[in-house]
Amino acid sequence: MPRKKNEVKASRSISAYRAGRRLVFIGVMAAASVASAAIFRTAAAESLRTPIELGRALFGDRNLSLSRKQNCVSCHSPELAFTDPRALGDVQGAVSRGGDGLSLGDRNSPSLTYVMMTPSFNLSAQNAAIGGMFWDGRARTIMDQVREPILNPIEMGMPDEASVVARLLESTEYRAAFPAIFGPRVLESTPKAFAALQTALAAYLKTTDFAPFDSKYDRSLRGEASLSPNEAKGRDLFFNTDGAGCSRCHSSVGVSGSHHDAFTNFRYFNLGVPENISVRAQNGSDVRRVDHGLMQNPEANVAAFDGEFKVPTLRNVAITGPYMHNGVFQELRTAVLFHLRFSESDGSKVNPETNSEWRRPEVASNIARAQLGMRMLSDADIDAIVAFLKTLTDKSYERLISN
Image (cartoon, rainbow, N blue to C red; front, side, top):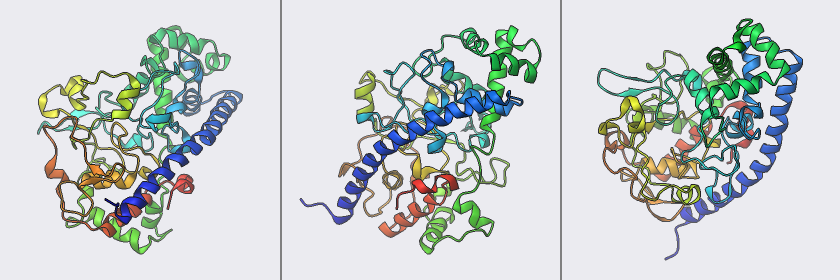
């Protein structure tokens, strides 16, 4: 049966996206490598006077990985909204490769942009989970989050905090900077030295490098730019209560305490995301393995949280695919359609990347049907929502947006 015109267009778009991602990978990784080296050299030359300067240097330092080949930039490149630019063949950028050059993760590396807006993990009086870092909130704060990748055996792979501090002591710049910033004997104590490293990295993550608030949408709020008619239509569908319902989960207004919108409510839901078969085939995971999401967080280890994952920010979403917690979808439009599959919207019953029905959920119980229910949307409505989502791209990344 011949495919519909919009299906053919979608298929071509996906192919172009994948081909483009490989080209971006080659160029971005070269640029990122040079940039991270330049950051470190500049920081060292300036003697690392503040926690932010020190954190920026640590973020680009490959010596903090066991192999001395991986740094924070490897999975969170400043050239691509602090996500991983590596396509890695059949994995198609869905997950990241570890510092050993072989290991593959099982979840997508989320953008670190606007991470500073995330509240600490907690359970409300209504037993709803909110905040925290990673897809399952297992790191309560940014301070906790910066620790785990360094010590994770399939990420940067350092065996313990003492080994990390030993690497810090190899650097004459660090031996001068840490005591100057955190106290004269800070490097003599492993716990104090590692805590200082966490403080410096967290300080850097809270800078405008990660949260410039200069997207077209932000500029439109300040009267510095105007949304096109289609972008404005998408904005209205996104926010209006009788629209698509996106802002029910993707808005922090009244949640974060900031006048800026993080485009997430920091909550957790099971959307019924299917297993990423390609990733599981590559990373050696047991075929019987199930990612239980929030339920794997020791603070939320109850069946009510099975299959739930944190609502991600939509800032820079147009350039930070693949999408969902396991990177199972390559296209932004596909991710939008997936959210509509319980509606009667045109095309919502078929995955345009496979031209088949959506595969079964990895965790079939506990799906958030109430949050996914919305009125019927036309193809034009969906296109408008995608157009609006592109306006959430920070100014420095607008050149990467595909039309």
